[in-house]
Length: 423
Image 1 (cartoon, helix red, strand yellow):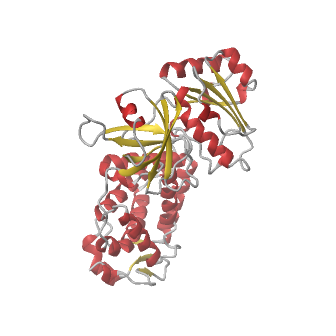
Image 2 (tube, rainbow, N blue to C red):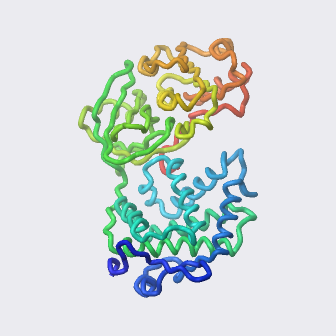
Image 3 (cartoon, rainbow, N blue to C red):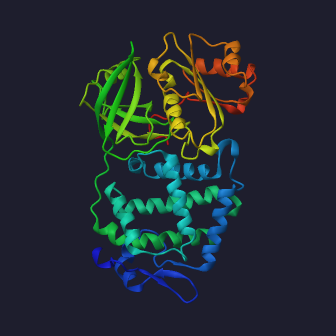
C-alpha cells in the first residue's frame, strides 16, 4: 500500500488558487488512517506561513521565556528544550541521535525554517521521501514521527513564551503534517533497522603516553560528528558488570575532521573500569553509545570563539584541551586568537604538548599559584579560562584566577561530563 502512494519525480502536494497548499485527495484516501497526528487533512495558508515566520523570528531573537544566563543563546534554548522533552517522552529514541546535540540542533533549526515557509518550498516528493529513507536506515518508525511532532509543538510552546497562540499551534501542526504525509509512503513501506543500544567499536591502536595513561584509538563504522571538547559515552562489558555493562564518558582528544571513523581518548588507570579499558588490545571491541556535549568549542563558527583563551588542566583531565587546540589549529586561518595552556602535573604528559603552533603556548608546572598564573598570562583580565580537573582543583584554580584579575563570567569548568542519557 505504501509504495502505491509514492510518485517518482512527481508531487503529492496540491497548490490552491489562494496560495494555500495541502495533500492531494487521492493520497489522503490511502494514507489518512496512518496519520498519527490530529491534522488528518492539513492545509497551510499564506496566513499560517506569516504566523510561523513571526513566531520563529521571535524565538531566534529571544522571547520572554529566554534567559541568557541559563540558555546561552535563543537557538540553543530551542534545541536543548526539544531534545530534553523528546528523550523524556521516548527514552529509546536517544539512540537515533549519536552525534553532538549542538550539530544536530542546527539541523533541527533548519527544519523549522522549512516548516515556516511551507507554501513556498519546492515540495519535491522524491527529496522529502529520501529523507524518510535516511531516517529509516537509522531505525525511525511511524510512531517516532508522531512523538517528534508532538515534541516539536510542545517545545515551540515553551520557548515562544508570550508569542505563542492557538493560531501558531495550528499553523505549525498543519505544516509538520504536510511533510509527514509526504514521508508516509516510505515510512510505511520501509523496514527500519532495529535501533541498537550501542555501536561496536574496534580498538585499532593503543599507546602508553605516561606510566598510568593510555591513548586509545577506536574505529566506529558510523558517521559521528562532534565538537572539540565533546566526550564519547562508552558501554563497557567489564567482568561482574550488571546488565549490558557500565557506561562512562571520556573526553575525545581527536577532532571530527578527516578521522575516517576513528576517535581517540586518553584514559588514566584510576579504578576497575579504567583499568579494564586500558588493558584492551588491538581488535578488541568496546561499545559506543553516543557523543555527549557539554563545554566545547564550535570551531565551525570560529568568529564566535573568544580571541584570548586560557586553559588550565590537571594531569589527564587536560584531554579536552588537546582536541580544542587541534580544532583551533585546523581553522587558524579563520581564528585570529591565541591560547595559553597551563598544564599542572607531577610529570608533564608529552603527548599533550606535541602540537607545535606559535599561537599556543604550553607551560607545564607541578603546581599552580596566583603569581604563576599572572606570569604565563599577564593579560589574564582579557582571557576566557577553561579549567579541567578534580572538583577541588577547579575550585582552587577559579579562586586564583579571580584573585589574579580574571572575571567570573569567563570561567568554564569540565567538572561534570554527561555520562548517561544527558544531552
